[in-house]
Length: 250
Image 1: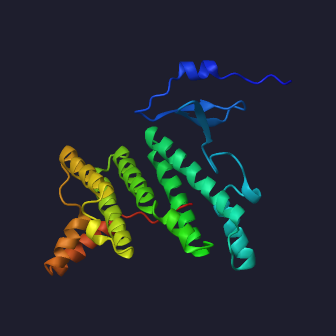
Image 2: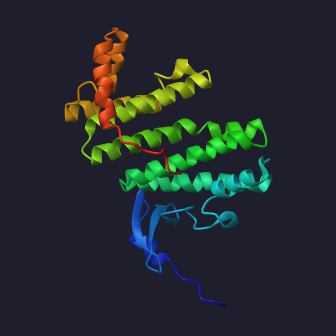
């Protein structure tokens, strides 16, 4: 019988803490960086790029890429039960890694993984086998958006851009409001726990870094008061600050 490696020492030296997210970077046997997350009765090990379990569905880096390739080839796709199960696995894996990136303060990576999950949700909306399966995933969209908004703002803060961080939260709140309106739960928006937490983060950043009204907020005020020359001036300032990007990289 082959000798099975014993992880008793690893678990003893790294005790589980139920009230904290315990995450660390480690080296794999080949020297590559991996993420380790301590969970009750064990350890999760995740790859830092591609799919967290290191698998390549259909030879692609993620199930999203593989299924997207099928759509390009066939022009349409009716997802099978096995494909749905693989999608569910990927949702869970990217959730764990997103939590790890946030704990490690690797906010740009957290944004990247949130974008992947949101893109996977969009794909599932278009190719879901039934409405119930769609709803099962869509219920988590506000939470994924919350993580993305939080990570984007904190990433801006790491780059010494507190005003941009405040604006990232404002833009994220607009996205959440649109989502609530889409599902006709707009009356619950102001009381939603995720919304409250984002507003608290925004106001704490304003206070700590003495951030007044952002340019976007000033623009909204100018338009509301029909001060169009001022609005044009502010738009010019915003344009000078806005980088030329080609969109998110999923």
